[in-house]
Amino acid sequence: MTPALSVLLDSYGADARQAFARARRDGFAQIEAGTLVGDLRPSELSTSGRRHLLRVLRDQGLSLAGLAVEHAGAGLADLQFADRRLAEARAALELAADLGVPRATIRVAGWDNAETGAAARQILESLANDADRFGVRIAIGASDPEIAKLSDAVEKLRAPGLGILLSSTAAVRPEADMQRVARLAAAVRLRDGFVRGESWEETPLGAGQVDFRALLAELATAEFSQDLTLQRAAAARDVDALRRDRDTISAMLGGGPR
Image (tube, rainbow, N blue to C red):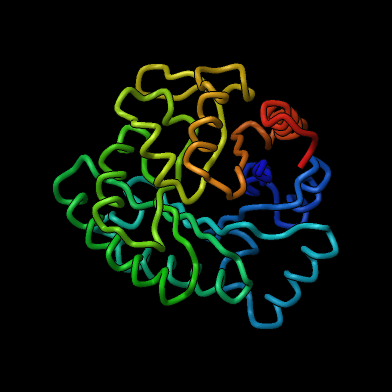
């Protein structure tokens, strides 16, 4: 089955209503939205507000494929903010369950540091229980260089409610075993660019280092059947960036717009 395409709403750099309209204009029927800032923060959505959000999405022809809880740095494994960030993640999981959203992406990084790595492993165990409690699949994200250690930790835990957030940019890393990470993926983000030392230079899809045909083949072999989420930092200033990316990946998938 050809995967559907969704868009990370935060890519638009706009408020929720404007981002909804731009996503629909770009041809997306599914979206993934961040919950740390803006109108989709759980604390900003009362029971009536949640019903209103679902009506707005329905009127726009959109559905929520996922919610994102992606703090900077080590994410939930940041020892200074761990308790607060874990509470924010759980609030997002409760919101996802309430709205009928099947997936949440949560950043748990710091795997290359002994102290934060130990904290990250404990947090994964806690999140595995939360996934069962709320009935929401959790995709764990980290930095691309950490993909091997993240995969080790998720694979060792063997929790059906946990997988990894696979960014297409990880495919250019020599330490990434793409067969394994495709098998462990609970969510996939698509973006392209070039590695420049320690930084990443974004490009339109198909113009950078990522071999998307190889990545899509690995996902097909792993029987990944969820949506593929497009992400662009440039979309806030280039109004057609995500539409062009969508057309590019649709062509690679061998079908029309989805």
